[in-house]
Image (tube, rainbow, N blue to C red; front, side, top):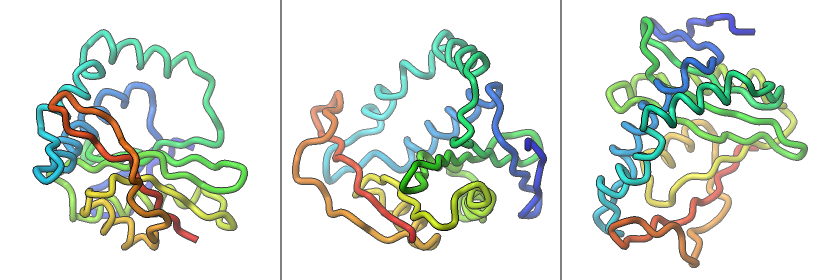
Amino acid sequence: MNKSIEQAPGITITLSTPEDYEACLHVQYKAALKNYPNIEIGITADDIESDYAPYLKEEAITAEVKRLSEHAPNLNHRQFIAKENDTVIGFCDVQEEDEFNQLLSFYVDPEYQSRGVGKTLWAEAQKVLAADKPTVVHVLPYNEQAIAFYETLGFQMATSVPEDSGTLMPSGAVMPKPVLMIRQ
């Protein structure tokens, strides 16, 4: 099932392997640094860097690759990666639950955003999801770029911005809780 499928010129989509973990982590980190700081609520790039620092350490990466290598695969969970040549430029995690499908994470390297990489990943991920179930995704309420992208995929806002607290960041700002979007 790790067959490569080229859906956009120069972009290849495959299932990930444990060896792809570090590249995916760096894509996620770069995208988070671009999309998560927010002046209005006081979240800084330093907050994001502090949040990711423990995961970016060599020993943490080695331990996670080892864990993934030894862990029996969850057949309801798939991680697809997008590569240009041999470079990971995006990834998408999906999981089928009893009542719904869940889009667990979706990141594209900022240098490759708005080039069809995300839509190509989504087209491949949809092939393993139950078509008769809704798909849900959680997104930060201020991440307008992600919300707009998910809307192009047919997702609609299902919950409003939570009033209660989120995650306290090192700067003292509070990262709000994600909101739910759903695609029927």
